[in-house]
Image (cartoon, rainbow, N blue to C red; front, side, top):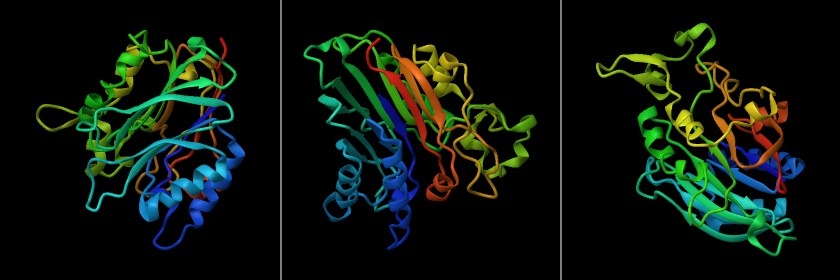
Length: 279
């Protein structure tokens, strides 16, 4: 089974142009994922969710849900979408969690391989986009996902978390924070009581890992490429901000889909995780 997380940057829509959206669909079609999490589906609510329906039809997928961000500049048109492939997976239930907490959204889905007749191969999918504002906000959001890092009543004992966590996977090169504009440090660094800055803030990610979620890089032993750092002159640091974490699932491949075409299509790169549905 293949899962993909890709922040689409303004939903692939630039004014009246959908050229990037068309390019994004071609890339996703080639990736041929069974589960797709798409943060930043901006303006996908327009015309009766026309863009969501078109993308789902193009990819042979069905939407689990598309949820509007709680915060943003009115009118808020940012959405997080989760889609699945009905030819390989069956949707058993879905929920939207933490509506009054998340800057964006958290979608939970319970899925089952279509060939299975009981719940032994069921698994959870969490799809989310954490706040860009600061680590404290992200830590609060992450606490809504810790229960699912282990056995939890009424839930399958395994799952995958697809997320733009907005959490850097490392310090800047040589811990040189001058590579990033000072007015953006609060997004990525720890903030001391006096308002000064500390090291990179990874608390939200560490909370998830300490709760049982696993980074596939530690399971496969293969370091993946960064997902950001190529799009803006004032943000040149190459970081992984986008993740596919797992619990109780075997990962066979985990990578960042870094191609010239993907770089032109968004300011984030897709993350691809291949996992075994059957242990």
